[in-house]
Image (cartoon, rainbow, N blue to C red):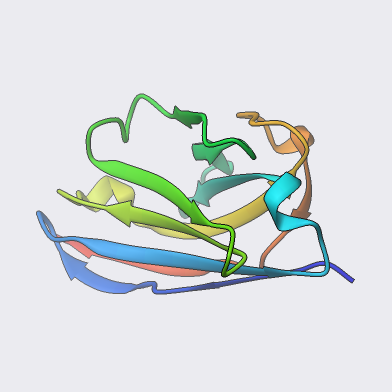
Length: 121
C-alpha cells in the first residue's frame, strides 16, 4: 500500500529555517505529482506547494520566495525547504501524492500523517 512519511518538523524561531522530508513507498514515485499542505490550529488545511512528475512547481502566494519544494526520484522523497519562517507558518504539514500538480486536496489521493512545525516569535 502507499505510504507517505513526513519528517523534519520541530520548533524554530521566527526568521529561521527548517527542512521537511516526505519518503514515499508503494507508488510509482517518479510518475506522481507531490504536494505539501498545512493545517493551522482552528483553520482548514491549505495548499503550500506542489511539484509535478517533470519538475514543474506551484506555490501558495503566502510562501513564495520563502519556501522551496524539490524532489529526489532516486530516493522517492520530496522535500520542503522553509526559510524566513513566521509564526503564521505554525501548522501541521502534510505530504500528498497525486496524478496532477494541483492546489486542492481533492487532486491528491494519498496523504501522510503530518509533521508539526512551530514557529515562535
